[in-house]
Image (cartoon, rainbow, N blue to C red; front, side, top):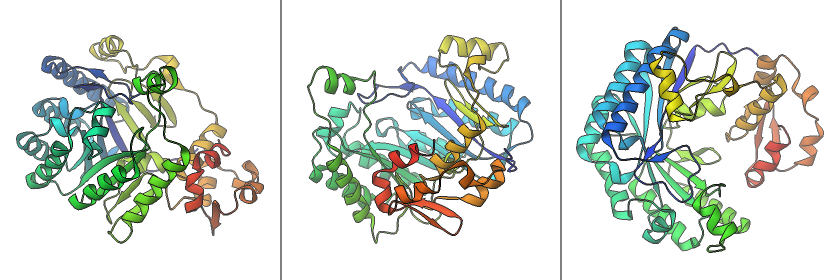
Length: 384
C-alpha cells in the first residue's frame, strides 16, 4: 500500500458528558468535575508531545475534537490543548478545527474563547427540535436551548456550523421529523448531519426495546421514508448531499470526516482514540487508569493487542466500504494505484449485475445510486 500525502488529521477524544444519552454506545462517562476535565486536558497535552516525536514531519490540516461532550471541558483548557498542538506539529494556515458540542454547554464567553483559540467549525448536537423526543433520547437540552446555541454561535462569529439531527427514533412521527428538519433549515447551518438512530447493545435503548419491551423500534420503511423526505426538503436550498448522512453548502464539507471516507491518514489522541497512519491501524487503551499511566510515563497509550493487524485484502475492503459512503464514490484507478492490483481481479464483475440500478460505474468511478443508498449496508458488505 502506498500513501504519499504528507497531510494528516488529528482526532482528539474527550470522553465526558453531563449525562449519557439513552442511545449512546460511544466511549464516554458522566462527569462534570472541572478538576477531572483539567487533568485530562493536561494528559492530552502530554500525549501530543509524545506522539509528535513519532510523526514529526506531518502537516496537520484538520483537527476534530469529539466525544463525549468536548464543550464540557473548560474553554481555557481546550485552548491550552490547541496551543500544544501548534507548538509541536506543523499546522496548516487553513487547518479546519472542529469541536463537537451540546447546546446546554455553550455560552457566548465560551464560544469567543473557542474562536480566539483557532476553532473555526462547531458541530452542535441538536438531534431534534421536539422536546418530547429530546426527553426520550435523554438529552440535557430542550429545543429552545438548541436554537439559541446556533444563533449565539453565529452571533459570536462562527461561519461554519454543523447541526446533528437524528431520525428513526421510537415514537417519532413523520411530522415531528419534518418539523425538526424545517427548523434546522430555517437556522441555515453550513452543514447538516442526518443520522438514522442505531440501537446499540449495552445501552438503555437496547434494553427498553429488546429486553423490557417498553418502546418499539421504527420499521425500516418508515426510517427510509424519513431519510428521503429530508433529501426532498434539502432540494433547492443550496445543500449538497456529499456523503450518505451529510449535506453541506458549497465548500463546507467536513474536511476531517472526508479523510476517513477517502482513505487518508489520521492520528487519534485521547482515551480509546483510533489512528490510521504510517500504514498501521491502532487505538489507544479505553481504560482511563491505563491511559494516564502510559501518558505519565511518556509512552504512547497503545497496548500490543490494540494494534490492528489487517491484511491487504482487509484494507481493500475498508477502502471500498468507506469510499462508497461518498456520493461521488471512489476511483478504481486510485484503488489500483494504492494496492497495486486490478480491481476486478479482487472483486467479481458480477457484483455490478447483482446490484444493477443500485451500484454504477461511470468511467473509472464507482458509486451508489440513490436507490443503492437504501441498501448500502448490504452492498458494502459484499466488498468487505
